[in-house]
Length: 234
Image (cartoon, rainbow, N blue to C red; front, side, top):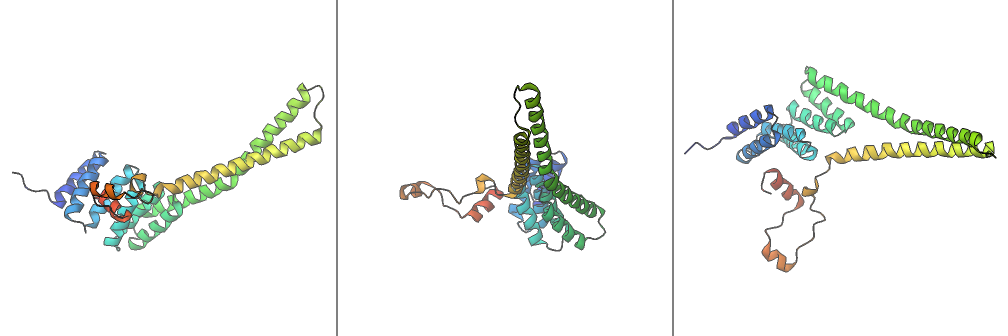
């Protein structure tokens, strides 16, 4: 019989899987290692990275937070958290996490470059919020002018210029409103990237009847269910 796997050997298997970009396999190895050593902050950090590459942002953030809880003075925990937040377009939160990592490790060029990158994304998002609605208004204005010109050229009795001007203004306002709405929903959709996946949302789960309770396993609270999911028990 072979020797039982150790947290260290499982971590090495996970690291090898990450190098080969087999992130799902890496998650399984790290999860097994965490079962054997649930207070090893490096295992949570590594699994956070694997979850991030699988675009499982919520679980990646959970592991990053657990890394910080277990080792609050380790800069890499905050860096992991920042990387997840950046990938999920939460640039302001990412900046705050990068700054915390930089406080703990001030000479790290990679952290500084990442902080600058996140700061640029904040400025870019602000500019987009300001300019996109006016771009929509401009497009609406062009459409309105084209309609006005077409009415003048192809209609035997053109519409009164004042009325057509009002129509053009209305179309421009609609363009402005549509572009502003687009930016809003774009921002909201990105904010939702760190929400728990549906599998972990047990709040709206129907309560079992007495008869069903005899046929089902023990129910868990939402937090317990999340932990069981992360530990591979679901």
